[in-house]
Image (cartoon, rainbow, N blue to C red; front, side):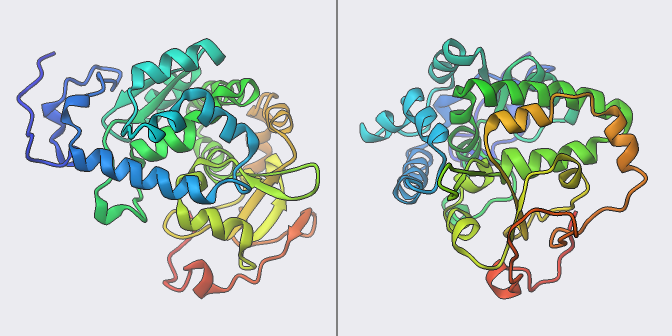
Length: 307
């Protein structure tokens, strides 16, 4: 495995993959020497605006994890993109997880294998400034800021390992689309209900997005439905706009307990049933908020399809 010369004049995300020493499991050593001053500045700007809006919106477990990892303290000292090794040491001591740097999206079986072994794949590069409001593929800010803090929570950490093991099995059963919906509506875009009935964010896709952090809780446009595993696995989603529906759990214990059983018979049962569109409400749904589905407010005017 030979590392070729780096292109110091290119933004981190634009470096050719062959310029990095990528192992067969798609991991690499975090190339901290390749981060530019602008890369670190983009991290700080992203962090600053999320820190300003998430108190009172993000769940307490996320905020506690962020503090426990020392990410907030690093920012206060003027730090930029965190050192993965330092975060891994803290995380491993808390819940047995570690972070592994990857070039970007990795094959499903590789992703699930890492998760099942309590290794969370993190994209090493950060978005450009012209992508600061939206980037479709995950970058280091989405992965570290959005995902990693909740891995400090023991229950959520166990859920993520179980998800990885379930993914390896689902791939053999041809049911990855069912499991992808579970991940999307929980890990990426999940909401959690508080004791007083108010909602908080735990999904990483929301926690790392300024606009969706506001939209998911304040807008009248989306549906907000009580979490139901089978219902969720039948529901398509949006990858290019705000979500039309958010599923709400009562606790991380509820989430883990619901996903503890063997999914094999569930997959078989669901194959005989039709899917739901992202905006659909079924008669048996526990509806917390029936959305207006205002296309302009939700960004759904372009007519792109659910997936």
